[in-house]
Amino acid sequence: MKNGKLLRWMKRAGVLLTVAMLSACGEEYLQSTIDPVTDFGEVSHNLYVQVFWWTMIILAVVWALMAYILIRFREKPGQDRPKQIHGHMGLEIAWTIAPAIIVVAIVIPTIQGVFETQRPPDEDALVVEVTGKRYWWNFHFPEQGVTTANELHLPVGRPISLRLESGDVIHSFWVPQLGGKRDVNPVVAVPEGEEPKRNWMHFTIKEEGVFWGQCAEFCGEAHSLMGIRVVAESEEEFQAWLTDWHTPAPTANAPEPVGGQADTERPAGEPGAEAQTAVNQAVAEDPLVARGREVFFRETTCVLCHAIQGTAAPGIIGPNLTRMGSRSTIAAGMLENTPENLALWIKDPLSVKPGSEMPGAQYGAAIAGVQYPATNLNDEQIQALAAYLSSMR
Image (cartoon, rainbow, N blue to C red; front, side):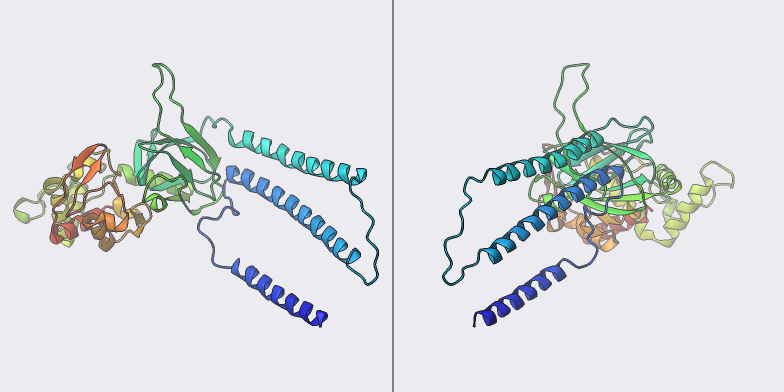
C-alpha cells in the first residue's frame, strides 16, 4: 500500500516538474539578461553564471545529504534511537568553513566586476546625454549636434558613454542586453566651478540588432510604459543616420506653393533647386502632407514644445520630431509608428499612456509647471498632422 502511494506521488511530482520545465520554454524574450551584447553586460552575466553554479553545487550537496539521511536513518521496526551527534566538532568546523570559502569565491569576482563596470570612459568614446522624463527618453549627441527621443541609434564596435540625468523625478535606465541598471537622477545644484554629479554607463556593443529596455525605477502611473529601443548598427549605417538627421526631410519645411501650385520656376543649378523639386513632388503626390505642415506651424502650439531640424520649430520641452516618420514606434514604444496610431496619439494621448504630459484635442496638460490648453484639433487637422509627421523619413 505504501509503495503504491509513493509511486503515485512520484508520478505527480514528475508531471509537475515536466510542466515547470516546459513553461520555461517559449519565444525569445525581448528584454533578456542572459544574452548580453556588450562588454559591460558580459561582466554581469559572467558573475551571474558563477553564482548560479555555486548555487547548483550547494543544492546538489544538500540534496545528497538529505537523501542519505532519509535512507540511512529511516524508521525500522525495533530500531534503537540513533546515535546523537549534537556538538560534533568536525561538522561544526565543516559547515562554518565551507560557506566562508563559497562567500570568498563569490565576493572576489563581484568586486572585480564592480571596478570593471565603473571604469573611466575611453578617450574616443561616443558620448550620449540621456535625459529621463515622464514618460519618455531624450537622447542628445553633443559632438554631433543630434537630438532624438526613445529610439537610440548606436554604432557597433565603438566605445559608448551614456551620461544619465533626469528632468524631473528619479528614473532608471535599463536595457538588459546592454548591461545592468543605472539610476537616472535629477541634477543637484553644486557650487560654481564644480561639475554636477551624474551617473555614467560605459560599454561597447559587439553585434548588430535591436535591443529593448525600459525605465526600472517607479516614476509615476505610466512608469511601465516608458520604453527604450536601442538600434545597434554598423559604423557606416550610424553615420548615414546622422547625415539623414542633419538633412531636413523634403516635406519638413517646404515653402507654401503660390496659389496652391508647386514652385516650378526655380532654375536648375540655383541653390535649393534640388530640394525644391523634391518638395514640389511631395506636395503634388500628397496634398494632405502640405495641409499637415500648415497645421503644425500655423494652427497649433506644437512648435512651443517640439523641434524639427531645418525648420522654424525650436521647442525643447517635448521630444524632437526630426525624421519622425523613420522611427519604428511612437509614445516611447507603446505603438507602432503608423499614421493611424500617430493620429490616435495626437488626439487622445492619455488613452495610450496615462499621465502623459501632452495636451489632447479635448483636454490640456501641465508641462514644466505651465498649464497648456487643449489643442482643439478636429479630425481633419489631426489626420493631416499625422500625415505630415509620417512623411519625414
